Amino acid sequence: MRRPEGSGGAGRRACGGLRSGSARGWRRAVAAGLVALAGCGGAPVDLPPRLDALRTLSVPQARALAGRREALLLDGVGELSDACVAILAAREGGLSLGGLGALSDGAAEALSRHRGWLALNGLSGLSPGAAAALARHDGPLYLEGLEALAAPELAAKLAAQSGGLQLHRIDAVADPALRALLAQGEGALVLPRVAALAPGIARVLAGHRGVLVLDGLVDLPAEVAAELARHGGPMSFGGLVSLSDEAAAALAASGEEIFLPRLERVSAAAAARLAGQPAIHLPEALGRAGAGVEPGAGG
Image 1 (cartoon, rainbow, N blue to C red):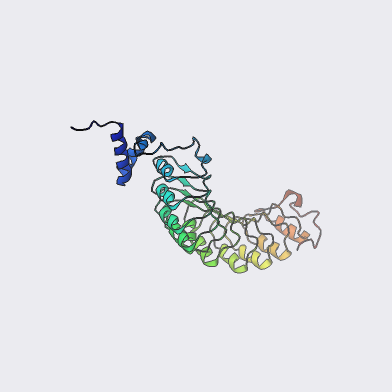
Image 2 (image 1 turned 135 degrees about the vertical axis):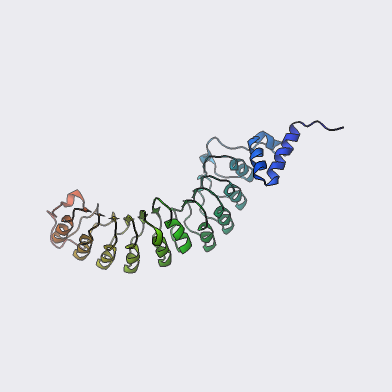
């Protein structure tokens, strides 16, 4: 006699869907709800109402989240197994894992196949293998926490994205990667922690086609200023408080829009030269004519 099919049969169908690997079976199983999962012999998956409250993530929880259509903001999760990453990467849609401080090559490979925007802003560094894998990600990629960028392929991918590029923690960029970064970039390039530039790197930066933000610079030697003055777009030097006469002359001759919001110590001649350029924005206290600035105050 055939056994009547009850809730246990529904649970077995859900389990079969989960094991089948087919997209249709997967979605049907998730849509059946967490109660169906109990038929697999386990308890319903427990998830908080707000995903930002999650600090850890189990494989069953990752599977439950994979069925959601909205973007997954899991920035509170500080560590994920490669299995969980693979489950999350297999879904389509925005995914933010800003709490991860490290990423294995295997996890990066899984994420390279993810479809949708991907934010990994907690990563401070990447292995060569992980960088190469993420460079193949087909969608917007955000890595604002990187402290170094030495992979040309990844730099080129980041540069090709619309909306500009913000690398808030990078204080040095390898020349090959920088060249790749600038080869395609036309939006804003924000490098607020770069405190010093060699003339050769400044020459590369001058080739960038877009806004250039170097608010971390605390010194601008004349030879570096001369290279940057060739840049064909707006520039911001929000960290500079002093300029030599030679550096000021180079910036004044650029003809581009330049922001010097904290500039204080310049000679009267340099202040007058800068103030004579309407596109150069100086602090109000400095005065558009350089009034009150003592000769020889520049460094």
